[in-house]
Length: 227
Ligand code: CA
Image 1 (cartoon, rainbow, N blue to C red):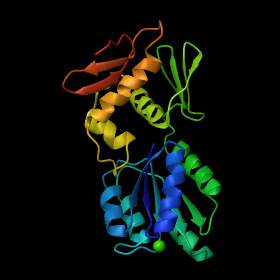
Image 2 (image 1 turned 90 degrees about the vertical axis):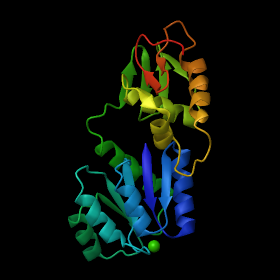
Image 3 (image 1 turned 180 degrees about the horizontal axis):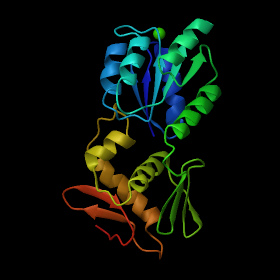
């Protein structure tokens, strides 16, 4: 899951981003409305968390622009303003939920997760490829019914591959989706993590599911092979 947080208050942004990353989400942070809109407009996000009072474009304007786009991304508004009129105005403008500062992270998380679920009605909560099961609600992974322990990044990588089973995903696509924008490492980080994943997921007798497509990237499918 990839979240865009548009928030100019550094302390709030850090606190929210840290919490979401601990929940295995990839989080990009924009500190003003203009950059926020540039990122949001790419359509790469599963959820946008949007402060209203921002330098550059206002949160209200970012919301209006987002709602003129074809792809409906859920938007959670974050603001110090608590007036009922404001809420009505922003719900009418297309906000999906509203959280007034100060808030507890636990409340933000519950609302964010609800929006992520609602925003993806076509996606099953349990992804299956062969005897592999990835439960997106509990974040548990099983093969042949046996639980597999993964780190946060390994899980995020496997979820992305499995959600796109049968499709070949390039290293760039994987980095963009699984790692934060702030990630500036080498693209071979993907190869390193795929190797870790294989040692946990493809080590058993059930056959290989993670396939290397030479010169392109990776794919998860039944009847895969070691690359
Ligand atoms: Ca602000």
